[in-house]
Image 1 (cartoon, rainbow over the protein chains, first blue to last red):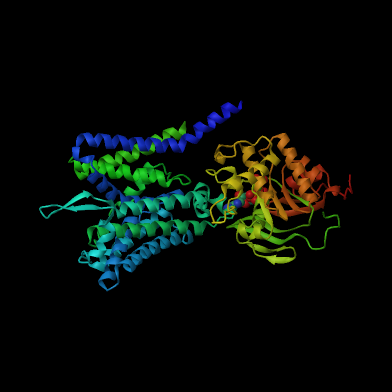
Image 2 (cartoon, chains in turn purple, red):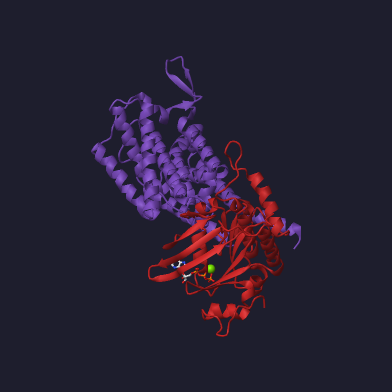
Length: 337
Length: 260
Ligand SMILES: Nc1ncnc2c1ncn2[C@@H]1O[C@H](COP(=O)(O)OP(=O)(O)OP(=O)(O)O)[C@@H](O)[C@H]1O
Ligand SMILES: [Mg+2]
């Protein structure tokens, strides 16, 4: 076998993961083009920023979810943990805590829920599906119990900053006395998502914990025999997922300027779908932050575009369900070849 | 390096080790020691308990009973990390490679090299891995492929390279040449003798009688989890060993052969 042949086949084989990403990007572009035709308002700066904003929450959840899925696990609790974190922050602010420490407390709450997930999975040897399903109910129940299922409002303007503020916003006073928005600015949540995504990608590819996450998902026993601390690695991944659920909760509740204990229902499914569309394998060992971000935007654009085209929420569910199954199926066909 | 006769303290001493899985006695009351610069063969039929005994020494499994001393000091080996810290490296029968990672990532798994800022130093790991693997197999080229795409022999070479790279005092080789071709097998035999000359103690599990007689100084035969005989290699021949492996006893007319 010649060297040329060898290197060519390697290039083709290496293409597997990037090919998946490429086809995901192509899907995204296709969706954007299609929606631009169906609704003229879709392809505008304003709507683009709306999509960014809507995707930020799912994107943050998907980053943590990707790490968990790469270890070979799953985190069904993120939607509920998001709500619980928001409730804790809301109550803390009501009790007189300033906004920033209050939000910090919310994120810590999320991280604690994640750490508990990790410990239940590793120490009690409960499967991730069952453990996080339990946490999903516990966190939701707590959020509802603590608030009596009522929203917490009047949290002050500064609470709304994170979700509604933006960089480089340009507003001009018009002659008639009304302000005119020249450029709506880049929303804080979008910038936050970008920063967290870059950080996540850096951790996965350049740090020891990232390598260990991959090895645990690839072959847990081999990782253990190689001296990887499997328990620590898994607890780390679930804690990260919980903390990011907390952060996503801050963004979402801040955007609404109200804490809603029943927010975030089924968000975990969107996050899982984003990761899977982006090429993560539920068998573990495979996945990337960049892929999951593309996946999150596919879901975000799909939701937004269908909304603007007047498609009902029920039909949206059906379409997203089909997209998820289709993405995984296409990936499997590719891997078989 | 170590021309002096073996010092009185063994590198490793396993005494009265037992391992039970529920009602199954995988290892029963086995004692075994190892001195520097010595190759000790651990032999037995399939399921005799060889891998279990060795996994106990590599910290991959905890014994139900028994003590282990390393360099004269009693140790508890609760994890593979503990064993490595005692200078015990293992080539597992299952190879223990993470399929989605490449050769270098596997070689350094759990002991990654890092840059000043704590980032993974992939360039340095790659260079070291390349050198270590080329020593064992000059034709090793696809270093950047995930190991799931490599051949059984190439995977085995990675597992061997990993065990010897970190300068062990004790090396456990559980059927290290099972997937190797003749030239690679010869290479591993050379390597074994070279490590032995450096004063490393080696436990070798093998079903290949040629390897056993070429490489081992002593053999220990297990049958149904029990030690049924430890001998200097000069005192036994192939038939004696086969008899021990199969029946668990020596031929009736056996006397020490004293070098054939
Ligand atoms: N994790 C485990 N759980 C239960 N039983 C086990 C486990 N590991 C090994 N055993 C049993 O212990 C016995 C000894 O197994 P072991 O792997 O030590 O055999 P071996 O001598 O290495 O055989 P081979 O030559 O086939 O590798 C076998 O009966 C096996 O089924
Ligand atoms: Mg074995």
